[in-house]
Amino acid sequence: MGDALIEARGLTINRPGTSEPVLSRVDFRIRPGEIVTVVGPNGSGKSSLIRALLGQMALAGGTVDRRRGLRIGYVPQRVQLDTAIPMTVRRFLSLPRRVTDAQAQEALDRTGVAGLGARQLTQLSGGQFQRVLLARALLSDPHLLVLDEPTQGLDQPGIVAFYQLIEEVRRQTGAAVLMVSHDLLVVMRSSDRVVCLNGHVCCEGTPQHVSTAPEYLALFGAEAEGTLALYRHHHDHDHDHDHDRELEAGHLHRPGCNHGQGPEPTAASR
Ligand SMILES: Nc1ncnc2c1ncn2[C@@H]1O[C@H](COP(=O)(O)OP(=O)(O)OP(=O)(O)O)[C@@H](O)[C@H]1O
Image (cartoon, rainbow, N blue to C red; front, side):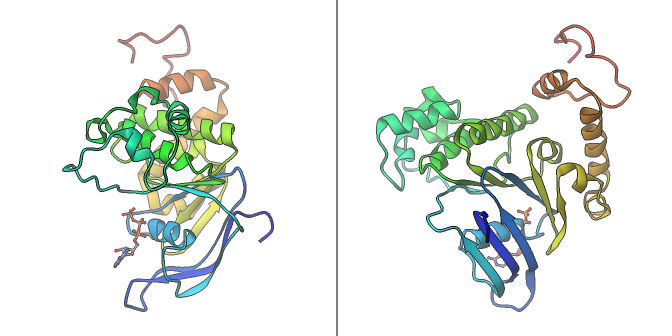
C-alpha cells in the first residue's frame, strides 16, 4: 500500500441482508497530510465508504488496508446526546478515554473554544459543538481525521470558519483529513483531492479537475456550475484576501460583480 494511511481496492458493499450493492468496486487511498473530500448525492454511499474504511462495515468484496498503528480521530455525522444526563464539555472530552485537564485544555485551545470546558453540552451552539467534537477527535493525536458532514446545520460563515480550522489543524498537526461534505464551494477551496461518488467513483482528482468533469457536472447540475464559476473567479484573480474576507462576511463576488475591489467593505455593502 506504499505510503498510504488507508487503501481500499475493489471495495464492494451490499445493502444489509441483500446482494444489492451500495458501493461497487471502489478504489480509494489517502496519504499522510492530504485533505480528501468525498462528495456525492444523498444515498450515494459516502457514509458507507467512510464506515468501511474505518472497519465498521462488512465487505461484500475487495480489501481495506490500514497502516499498522494508524490512529484515527473520528467526528461522526450524528451524535445522540442524552439530554437527561447533564454533561460538561470537559467530562465529554474524557469519554471514552480519560484525558488530563492539560490535554483537554490544549485540544479546546486548538479548536478555538478555549473557554467552554465548564459549559453543558446542551448549551452549545451548533458551531461550538462541532469544534468540541473536533477537539475530542484530536485527543488521540491522530494520523488521520475523519469527518462525516462536519458542518451540517452551520450557517455559511460558520462553515467557512470550520474549514479554515480544519486546514489550520492539518498545518499544526500534519494529520491527513478525510471528509464527507455537501458544501461544494468550500470543498473546492479546502481539499487537495476530491472523490465524487455515486455508488462507484464517478471521478476524482484535484478540485479543479473534478469540478470540470462531465460526471460531476451531471450529478450536481446547476449548483456545480455556480460553484465552478465562483471557483474559477477565485483562482483567475489575485485577490485571495478579498475573497476570504467576503466569505467570512457571508458574501461572495460573482464574475462581473465589481464591488469589494476598493476600500474595506462597509456593513451596508455586505
Ligand atoms: N443500515 C442500513 N440498512 C439499510 N440500508 C442502508 C443502511 N445504511 C445505509 N443504507 C443504504 O445505503 C445507501 C447509501 O447510504 P449512505 O448513508 O452511505 O449514503 P450517503 O451518501 O452518506 O447519504 P447522505 O448524503 O444522505 O448522508 C442508501 O441507499 C441507504 O439507504
